[in-house]
Image (cartoon, rainbow, N blue to C red):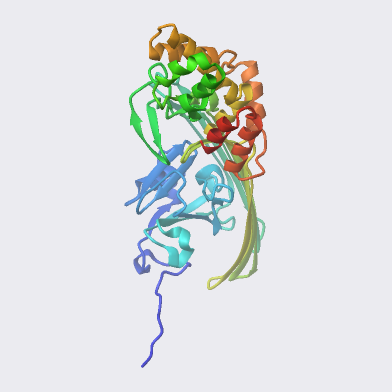
Length: 448
């Protein structure tokens, strides 16, 4: 007898937990209401076998198996059947967009692989969030939360936290009902302040000793713009020796590799910690028959937050809208939805800071000034590190101070410039446009 392969999996429809063929962790509306947490997403981290990465106040990424990150592309999050994934970011954005806390009826977590049910993105699990039906939950609901953040933090002063939510639902008839929801969050988020020196080796790196005052190639973890680095000896000093022959013999005695990085800015100087999140939603429900219900819903979220991935990102004026039309019965459903995203003024802190440095003083000019000042100091008998510090002070002359009018003008000019090409190609093309003088020098910067 010849058989055929059979895949047995859980259904997509409601069933008793004891009868479900997969493990399901469930959070009810009552549990959400009674749990003291800033967001209902925080409850997920208390479930069995769940690990949560908090990239910021409003950016939570759960996982149930394997390695986790702040942007977990292997964990599905669905809100009323809509994938919570942001098209541009390619992973779920948590509570930035979606249901307000008053409109959450339940959360169901499927630990481990759930690809048979919800696609390949469910390798690390799936989170299903269901909203309250306006047929069952009617009337006006209002919620206010307040708290204090950064208590006892010398780096940041204490700041308030506010969360206001409202929901209005009405059952017009046995066939028609509607609801309107909204939520507003305002707080000052945390800022990263790890200033340890980072030694880059390809795409990886290690922590090493040194500060900006003790290492001319200093690259602070949460300092941005100092990722631009060159070998000063081969690309600047040798070129100076070729133009000034009586310096060449002195230059030949120097080390072959003298790495020097540009001066960067800290996260506190660049990022806006003012977190604002506003969400609004509405839904129309109509029962075509007692067992078939049609619904038309829309959700819109906007705000500012900070996201940590392979780099630090400031999501500023991010706007995401999700809209769905669904026909559903006990045995089947037909669903169509769309997600519309506008990144607003969002930007990568590292790439923006590097281009900011190129705007106020191109690297070819900065490194040439650095090289001449360094040579003059060395030939005057000054120690190596002191010579580097004097050279940096000379090259940094005119550097805009963070928060000044000039700084804000140039910073906005860089970060508000749309990127039409792929990010890396755009950055390289901009550097190439700015650095035209020395072709050998250009070749290294483009490689970097």
